[in-house]
Image 1 (cartoon, one colour):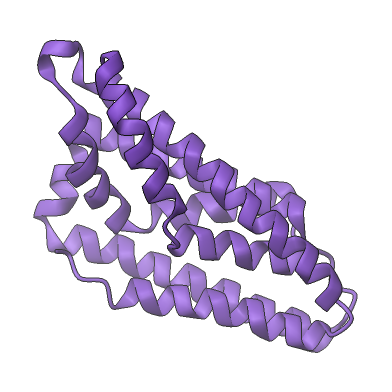
Image 2 (cartoon, rainbow, N blue to C red):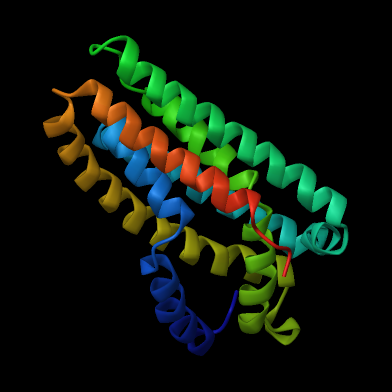
Length: 203
């Protein structure tokens, strides 16, 4: 476990990162618009679960492998691009083919958030750059410290992203009368995230 001083320094830094708009926040916003508050909260939980997987991988050293091998990085990245584009197409089709398309279930939204996070190799590179600054071998097992700090980061991210998604869910309800517009808006968000991931550099 990190010492109290380290935790007190880490919490505000993690919160500042959680509050910075990014791909995770935009994804939850898109899910909220598309399927409502419940799906947005589930998507946020999936993203946080994915973040914990990244933290665990970084803690055991596998993150360094991804950072050192461009091919592994690119395979994961393009898988994420393909998945986001599929979500974009599904959103647009759902908005243009029928106005009563069923919303995404919580289980599917959780899975989508998990996959989107796991297929973003930039997350594990971020974890490798940020978390070790607060890890000390003298404080105990390194993996336990990674997991503890990762849990703080994931919980903060869950709360912030879920709130954004819930707000978007209320907006989506008002936009639901125009299913076509809603489909294009959410599809555009997912397509923009795919583009962002496609042009990521390893540095």
